[in-house]
Every structure is written in structure tokens, then in C-alpha cells.
Length: 284
Image (cartoon, rainbow, N blue to C red):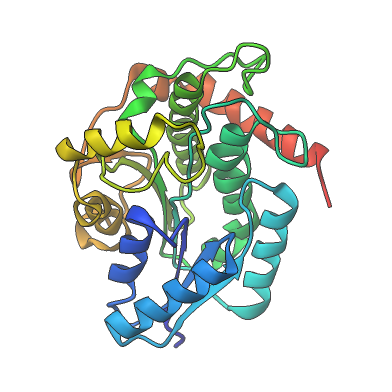
């Protein structure tokens, strides 16, 4: 039988890199996705050297792009015969409003529509065929501040970086819960998590404003390490205790009840339908 195959997005830095490294300690085939070839290559080399696992590879894609996300998923399907664990970890917060080349607000595109929803949909048949399989989506405690306007999910005209980030993290849990419901009986589970506030480069590299770096560096004095921040992702992806558990939200490796908005079944369905319609409108 082939080795288990694990995909980790956003794995060239921060908790994604730690998650990928620790997953590679096991006897698995690891595939990471990143948008910088240089960073992907160096990360793969580092993980191979650190773990002794030579079965580490990468796919190149900007997961805020629907086109590139579809292409990466197609390349994955061509190269591999299974997918046992998908860890949706990629994410960012953009301080100023901006759009991708496809005309989608950047935080919404990367943190939900393309980086989570579309990628998962493109790989769902392979996950089902590889069951038992797990889908792990990194959300945040910031989801509790989210409040979705379904007529303006991209916050056009009233953009707030912190509000949209919270919205996107709320979307991660809404998506996960609806996905879990739709996957009942398939052997594929879907769970979301809060990694904690982590001392990483998150929020620094993609935001050029002068005051961002010192503010975040100060906050890091009170933050978790990247290794600590990755613990819950790794737990959900690997622990026998989570076998068969689905549609849940975790914090510090324990189940936790998310904000009431994340448990709204009507909101879960509405976000799914809106997301599906949007990705269909921008097809290859």
C-alpha cells in the first residue's frame, strides 16, 4: 500500500512550516504549497534534512488565485494517488483594500474562497477515495469578532482589515461545519482550530506600513512560539483521539464551542452556496 499523503498549505513559514516539519517525521509523503519557488525549495530541503524523510515535495501556487489553485490541485492529482490529510493553513491579513488579478478582495480570496473552499473542493474526490481522511482548517479566535454581510462578503466600500480578517476566520468555521455535514458517511472528517496568538511573521511580510513591524514585534513578547502554535493542527491531523470526530472546533488540543455565529446552520449553507457560485463564475 502507498504511504499516506499529507498536504499543508502556507508551509514555508510560521506554524505551517512547523506543522509540515512535524508531519514529515512520520512515514508519509508530504506535499506543501507555496507561492515562492525559492522558499518552497529551501523549506523542502530543510524538512528533509531535519526529519530524514526524503518524501517531501512542493507545488507552486498563489492560493489567492482561483486559476492557480485549480492548477495546483490538478498537478497534485496527476502526481499522487491519494490524499489522507489536507491541512488548510495558508492565511494573511492585508491592511489596505486590494484585489487579486481576478477581482476578488485579497483577504477573502486567500483565507476563504480560493485558499480553503476551492482547494478543498478540487481535492475532495481524492480525499473520499483515500478515506479515512482528515481535513484540518486553521481558523482563529478572531472569528468571534466576525459578522458577515452576505450582500458584501468582500467588504467593498467599507473595508476594515481587522474586521475582514475576523470575517474570514468565521468563514473557516462555517465552511468546516457545512463540509462536515456534507461528508457524513464518507469517512472524511473536517475540523477547525484556533492556533493561539503566535510569534511569527504573520502580518509583517505582506504589509509595508512602517508601524506594523514594531507593533507586532512588541506583541510577540506575550505570544506562543511557532512550535506551540502548531500543536493543535498536528493533534487534529494525527491523534487517534480525533478519529471519526468531525464538525468541531479545537483550541489547545481540546474541543471548544465557537462563537454562536459559527454554529448558525443557515449561515453555513448560505456561505457555501455563495462561495460555490463565485468560484463557478471564474472558471478556467
